Image 1 (tube, rainbow, N blue to C red):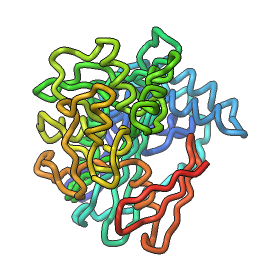
Image 2: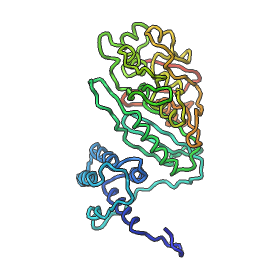
Image 3: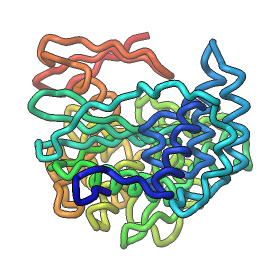
Image 4: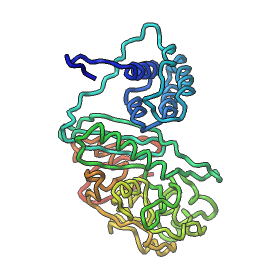
Length: 374
């Protein structure tokens, strides 16, 4: 607070907060993650768990910081940030002469037009706030997506879709409060995976992630059946391969109205839409999609005994599908497409090579096309 003569006056709560920050910074926790914790986007355990993972993965792991993170994790527990908590107990964890904290964030004009992008991945949820006029990032935040569900079978890979949505919404609300100049929201995320929704847009099932292997089990597997009956070669984890497996096993909930990807589900929930709309790039990622026709291959679906009734409608346009707190939300696009657009400067003359869990080489074309390489 400022006094009448414009001096800043720090009260006991301010001092306690500074002590917390100083101790967390000594443990190597980033300012961005401290902000997320203080704004109740992540818990203390999530914040320290992420830092411990960073330390374990780093070649130069600092033993002192690992011990400090473990001690802090026990102190902070699983609760969200509580500004009324007494932080004096952390004072003894500070060094006698604390080093200067040098992490800085880029100054931001909150009045400048900004766009916000969200990426819902299988292990993390990331957000970037960008100035669309300069292309520069005003801020980048990443939180852990650790909502895996216990697997009964070794080939299962399931996540709690409702908890993922809750985390995304909490992160989004934090960013909109911090950056009031945001004028558009875009989403991307893990392709191929699906979940089932009821007629009101609520999740009926967990998210079957792109790593779920149920369609590859058995001989012949569902993937083998799809290849034999349609000529399409798709892998286990592709959304429609998973769906066909669930149909054959009689496990699709009776009140299912539609299936969709996790980012389409999130966008629809944010906008209050009961039936998601999917972009062509995500539709193609589900499998049994005809690039030439620009839609799911209905004849191929018929051959494997699948109706189009549960499939989302497809759009080829980059369009707003609704609004969240008055801000337009764009139809989510595939993660490879989002990566290309984010990395390419001059998109017409750029080829993007991506080396990750899979590998892709991508370029922009005037008409849909695909090339399959061994």
